[in-house]
Image 1 (cartoon, rainbow, N blue to C red):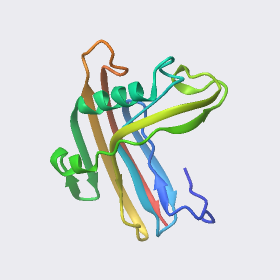
Image 2: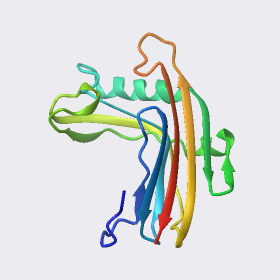
Image 3: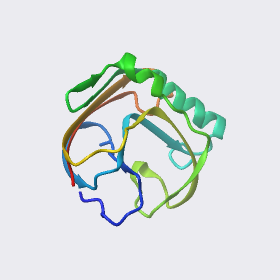
Image 4: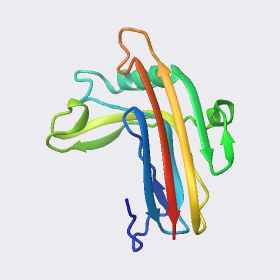
Length: 161
């Protein structure tokens, strides 16, 4: 992936992988911080039809309350679950527009959604090479859990020019 050097975005988003293990290499411009979704969760009324916004918030909260591990390593600096717990961020509801053939079985069109999770925004990066590793897992055994077992393990090799 290459971030257009002409973009005005001050943050480069490192995407999750939907679960499993991934390794990615990206090139981006110096001076951009990173947005790292260490343990993300989003739910919309398209993915959970006939649920109120309050229900969506409860689902998102239950999901992230079930997190069993969090880990982040930026270069040689490691951050444990205890370090990362202060960065949990639930959102207010927001609107999303799903395209045709959207992920998660969502139908095309506008939808209300909420999110909850552990998200990090770093300081802007200087030129150089960086390795970012982040992992999270959860176990939510209750019957109304959307994602009863989830784990992601993602490594980014960043080339900052």
